[in-house]
Image (cartoon, rainbow, N blue to C red; front, side):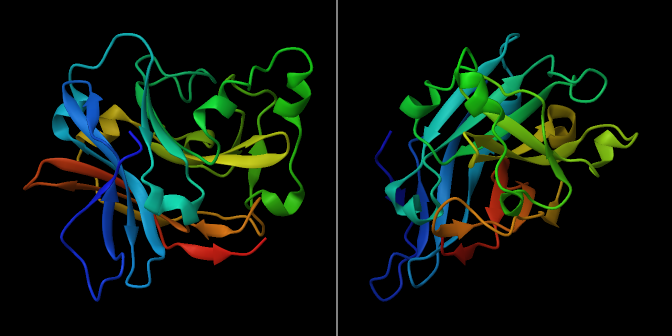
Length: 240
């Protein structure tokens, strides 16, 4: 899973191009994570690619699929990505209880995630708020976190929190007062419409460490390859 490969887009011996994780099954289809580097070897975007068949044959219970990021993604601080399938959605009821996917882009490794229990003294780390500069505008932390994930901060101006039906949204995750993941979240019904979305995401003033961080979310469907792409782009370098 730690191996990665590049396409044939190479210019002047730089690392420019797409680098992928090992491909793995999701539902009846397949998926892989990726990083796209520019001619200087700096990340332009990170994301997931999965085919149309991945939306079929999904289990009736919650399921997590994990993709280790290629080593070329190191400057983004994203260690691994998970596709979390929620066939009955999750809380809060009446908002996120529709069948949907949570796409987590974690800065920490899987071993660290397993230590996030939300039990006993860990509840303090789970609910510890970050400094105000580490929260994006209009984002608010939830009252409690989720084991093996952390606490979730959501934009309180999001349409689904203001009377509209949930289709897609963008979440930040925190643990022990530090940001540890991004989470684009979207319903399977929305994906089945084969959307074309490009939007700016709200960003904080500060991040936990030096690296490249996204400012845009793109969702697209390629009618030729029958593939979806979930992409976090517009990377901007931040120095801690």
